[in-house]
Length: 196
Image 1 (cartoon, helix red, strand yellow):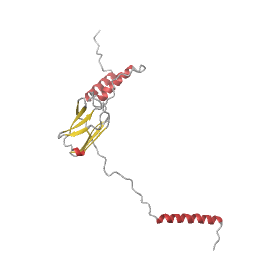
Image 2 (cartoon, rainbow, N blue to C red; image 1 turned 90 degrees about the horizontal axis):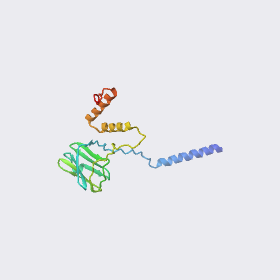
Image 3 (cartoon, one colour; image 1 turned 180 degrees about the vertical axis):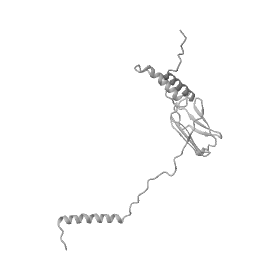
Image 4 (spheres, one colour; image 1 turned 90 degrees about the vertical axis):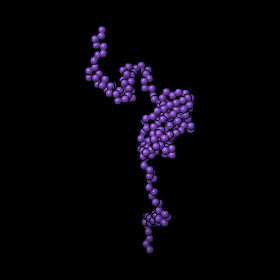
């Protein structure tokens, strides 16, 4: 029998402990890696409904959307105090969505509902406070004058023109673009020419 010096004995003990711990782990069930759960349902694509009409009385707002083939069971509606989101699934093979991320006034979500008719959908929003809404959706007042006295006065006109361009239809955009390019190139005629 060989006599071990201290260093060899300590090394042997460490190695022996390591091997015995590995063997005891192997005796138990080996952990099976589980794959990350991935949703098997693909994300749905929605066509945004932009064409609608609306009406109101003192207590509620009714939004009318022309859409045929809607099934009540294939519809989701989520109402919040200042917004709503309505999704229509599998309407003639397509998914539609009508949403308002910020309403003009507060509503009562618990009372609000969606009615499905044969050729249209009616979204009923019950007002939190009685009264007349000027608009359905909240719009920041972009035409409100800025009272900053140190600001360049022409900046206000430029902001107004920018807002008109951004919110205008195609004809408005063409007119503003033409006036802008004519003014920059010096093509515009003086409208007061010939007057004393």
